Image (cartoon, rainbow, N blue to C red; front, side, top):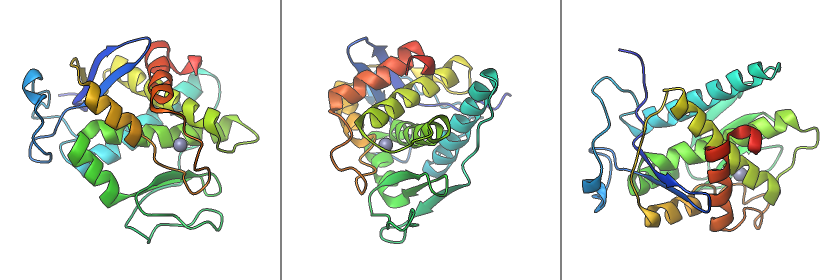
Length: 231
Ligand SMILES: [Zn+2]
């Protein structure tokens, strides 16, 4: 069997105007979802990513692998994250002297690492399904990509939306490449939740700099539809 991560991610019609994007619940690790009946179980026995921890690790490694290949194609070299760190509440790493905060995930350009509040992300995973993990982590890695492509990396609304676009493009690239599997479905409400939950991050830098949910969905959809080059 080929190692193939099954992302039970419902990518309903990814429309030009909004990205219908919602996760489906994982068996045994999720609240009941009334829309689940419309979905087929996609987790094959051999697939990885059956737990929160596995999905987190997969989202990281697959996304970084995607960027490594994309950089290579462009004749460049992707610089992998130095660390990918789970933390708990107040006990996160600081970034350039700024303390991390609970209920957050962030990319730190100073150390070129990503850190996340494990309990917080786990609760999103329980509530929204694995799609939450596969949006948040690729978004944060999108910032790591920006930091390598820009000489003046800083966070602002354009960078946040571009990171959403990168996340959509990377996920589509992984799906096209067969590393991730997506299912068709439709769940606008989860989409809205996910857009809100996709990046409540970086708030300690720029509280107002993430864009509206609609903007965020549009940029995610742009990347998903047109690839990272369109970002
Ligand atoms: Zn961000």
